[in-house]
Amino acid sequence: MSASPFHDERLLFTPLQPESDAIPLIFAFPNEYTIGITSLGYQVVWATFAQRLDVDVARLFTDIQEPLPQQAELLGFSVSWELDYVNILGMLESLDLPIWAKQRQDHHPLIFGGGPVLTANPEPFAEFFDVILLGDGELLLGEFIDAYKAVRGADRQTQLRHLAQVPGIYIPSLYAVTYQDAAGAIAVIQPLESEIPATIQKQTYRGNTLSTSTVVTDKSAWENIYMVEVVRSCPEMCRFCLASYLTLPFRTPDLAASLIPAIEQGLTVTDRIGLLGASVTQHPEFDALLDHLNQPQFDDVRVSVASVRTNTVTEKLAQTLVKHDTKSITIAVESGSDRVREVINKKLQNDEITSAAINAKAGGLSSLKLYGMVGIPSETMEDVEQTALMLKSLKKTVPGLRLTWGCSTFVPKAHTPFQWFGINRDAEKRLKFLQKQLRPKGIEFRPESYNWSVIQTLISRGDRRLAPLLELVRKYGDTLGSYRRAFKELRGTLPGLDFYVYADWSQDQVLPWDHLQGPLPKATLQKHLETAQASFSV
Image 1: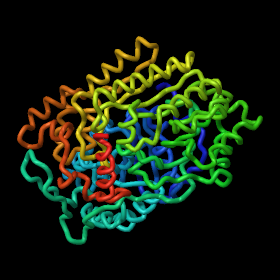
Image 2: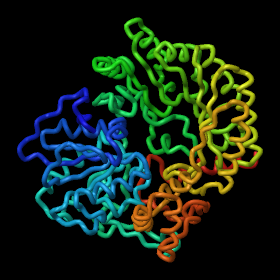
Image 3: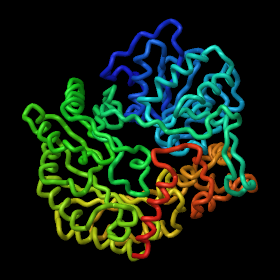
Image 4: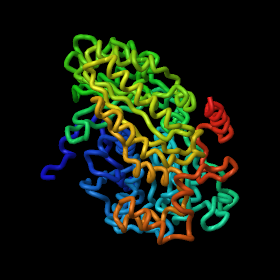
């Protein structure tokens, strides 16, 4: 880049001038600037550090950096995509730091990480990190810095033992994992010392002021967008959904006290607003928010909305979006099969999908994007055929509305009721079937790579034995063939790909994340699983 993109940033906070003895901290995003600066989580954490007198923070991306301290004491990574681990290892090496936590010495910075990937299941990456923050930054960041300050001058082991006492802070090196055998399941996960907590509880921020952009720039992937978190979590609790289960409870900011002032602040630096959340239209005051945005003074404001719940797509919503320069809306319906939707707890009927499409077109939208998946536990080919029929019927009912079907393969996620299931080997065939059925009918089909789903499953269900494999994969080149080659080379030291990816796991099995407590206890997830299984044969 010729000119630094940092010069184009419009800040919505005032960074403080750090004290002379402030902690030198590097906060990294393991991808390019344009991607990292579009991450609301990264923005908020960076601003939190930059507004502390006792922290001197510098940002680092794969392609650009601020001037870095000579001797950083803390180096943090915000991790929101699994395969970015390759960049994490590369960035550590570029800073002349050992990639393995066990090889770092007192003069090396403590390497910490957070974000959705590490909060869900940090175990495949555990041996690369000294410290992992589990949960919401609103609570954890201040506790982490304050706890570190108390042992700032101590040796590394003293620092780690002290940090391990802070709720939500996980120190992987202080826990031993024992396996039934080299290629078998986990036997036990336990702390190395009695004073180290046996379980670490994810920290949940329960306040009703949610996140908003701290920086706006035309160099971000979404140009000049100011992001407002309208809801956190999702009340629907689809049984495969990490975004719902891992982030419970459902939280909404007050419209008058929080959302409207946040939007007005954003409009001082840009005319583009992004309303974010797993299910933004389920904010109890969403209709009043639309009324607010429909006032004449906001006529030139562009509004983008994340995925919305199907039965909240009204003609008024569509008209508001069209007025504010949005041509398309996205809904997640998962399947065209009533039975499959019951299995996953998707409270939705096909006629509601039809109504959403009719309202979208009547309100002036030109495009409707629907998201679904194949390979959901208990799914049969008949269920997939029903999805194709539902979409073809929709195309006939609402001619002229452009339909897109984005389709992924079911991937089991930690802390959800479906964490015990492997993925369906027939999923790739089912994606191809849908492609043949839909594209000739003028329905745009966007499948997510089945091979990527395999790797995502490997990492989402992985344990610490994967760390050497991940390092090998990076060496061989980041392809599916690299994973197979690495498994072959490490045979006998870890289970095969089938164990992690395709096998259904016993509910008695020790899971890699059993010592990390999410919002709901394991027994509750098992009850939700039993309810789902009752619908398998309906």
